[in-house]
Image (tube, rainbow, N blue to C red; front, side):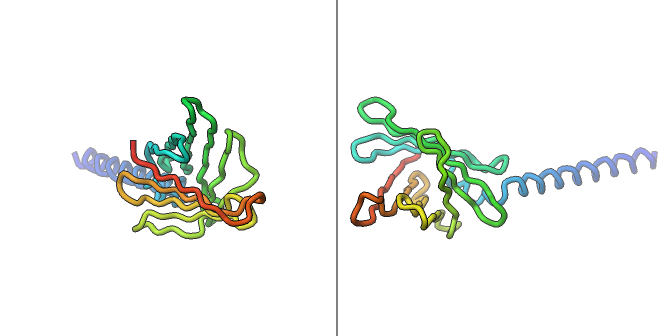
Length: 165
C-alpha cells in the first residue's frame, strides 16, 4: 500500500515538474514577445478614402505575424505582412510589403506596457523610419508611420486609426 502511495506521489510530482518545464519552454520560445500581445486581433479603418484591414496573431511559437490589406474601389490594392521576432535581446519587426520580404527591419526602441505603446525605428531608412503602435483604447489600435521619403521636402506621418472588428 505504501509503495502505491509513493508511486502516486512520485507520478504527481513528475507531472507538475513536466508542466512547469513545458511552461518555461513556452515562455522562452516567445522571447518576451508576449508583452506585445496587445496587438493581437482583427482591426479595420479608413485611410485617404481607402479601407484598411489588419490581423495580428499572438506570440505563440515565438513570433507575432500580421496580415494587412488596403482596399480601394472594391479591390485589394496593397497587401503587407509583418513579422515580429526576437534577435538576441532585441525585438525586431520585418515588413513584407506586397508579400515580399523587405531588406529593411525595424528595432523596438521603446515599449510602455502600461500604455500599450511600442516604437520601432530604422533611422537609416527614409520612409518609414519610425513606426509607432499604440492601443489607444480596448477597441482602438493606432499605427503611426513616419519618415522623410526621398521625393518629399519634409517628413510626413501617416496615421492608421483602427477599430477592433
